[in-house]
Length: 315
Image (cartoon, rainbow, N blue to C red):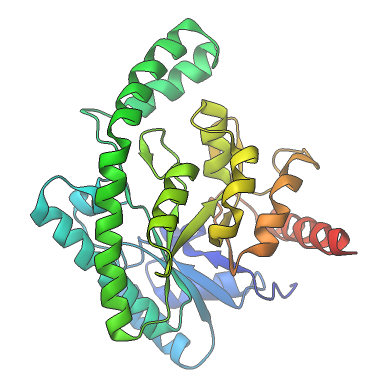
């Protein structure tokens, strides 16, 4: 087992195979991680066995993922309008839930809360159809381009409204955190569906307008790769513009449009992921967010490649 140092590991990797929190955390510790990100599927019941581990210093918590702990309500799941709801009562509830996540983060000594802030709402999940057309016909096909233009017209038109709403919600949360004296960052995460927010430039706008608050960009590398492939933004170019806003990263790689694979190892491409090493090195919180199919030996190999390549760059 290789000690993974400052790197953290998300419980999304093994949460589906555990019902008891301690067992889930022990399995992650066996990989050499001293810190975890508690993801949004972690229940209050699981926390009854994890909390004593945190208190005894057996495990550190780098971050928690809003909404935390888990609540069984589709209105406030990770793929909802959340902080941008048109319905004021729902938006108020979303703000309260984020404050609740921050309260837990503060209690556990976590540095950040990862937030899916919202989306431009559609009547149905247009992204499923777009991804199917992408796979069946390709990005440059007339079929894909036709539906993409429908999606992007609505997204571009309504983005300023929802950016403003999200910003106002984050302002309320930030003010609450300041009153409480919490030293917890709010990381707004790059997303995996084309109508979801923020894009990199939307994140920049929000961070600029809330300068001085604890709101930062949470750069999910795999999701940004996916949005670049689909055509939402130029990931590598815009990364240079937004890297200074990054607080945390989710480390994983996307193959075609499938995410949460081990960087370098599953793509068999030993060069492309190098583009993201600077962002990983820069981030205050570095979290592997991998799918259950990733094996321990693959996780170790991927980590060794990332850390040795970062060390070589500093050389």
